[in-house]
Amino acid sequence: MTPIGYVRSPYREKFAVPRQPGLAARVVSELRLDPPYNNPDAFRGIEQYTHLWLIFGFSLVGGDEVFRPTVRPPRLGGNSRLGVFATRSPFRPNRLGLSAVRFAGMKKNSGELSLFFAGGDLVDGTPVYDIKPYIAFSDSISDASSGFATDPPARARVEFSKESECFLSELAEGDYPCLRELVADILSYDHRPAYRSCADDGRIYGVALYDLNIRFSYGDGRVLVVSIEKLKSDQS
Image (cartoon, rainbow, N blue to C red):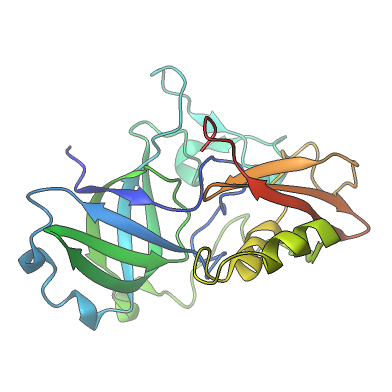
């Protein structure tokens, strides 16, 4: 298979990427189409749809090519094993993923064509292999059973330290649109490894969003954004 394009998103690493699409609804990503798929005729009528399916590759999933029939879903604490085909684990035979995202428009610039979408759960650089429209009457099944994922994940209150507030206040308008809301949206979910989650471990964690290093901690039932700073040039 040949990718039709590659994603540009604020997620520079796997840590802190939402574990399902739609959880961080404010995050807008860009799919830059490669030739010959950057022909506007290939997208004629797409504006009629509010949501799309993206079929993509888990490009950061390493490991050998030996088939592993079971995985440890983070949702189950990482201690229980289920069949890989009974989960959405990225450790799949062909490393393929499927995400429903909100269509946020298209833009053509100097011969390049980009599709924008919101609520994605894709790391920057993810290859996309196909796009299909989301059809509400057939794709939304009201009486479906969701196995062990019956409820959305819990969210915590996100607060900002004085240092991070200072950084946000000094940002030039338009450099990072809605950065405060975006950071709060993403960090409100517990992204720690299963053996550390649900505990106030006193550690400082870091995640790269855009070209920024966001440092944060868990404690007292909240997430505290300790600092926000530019990544060094060799890290961005």
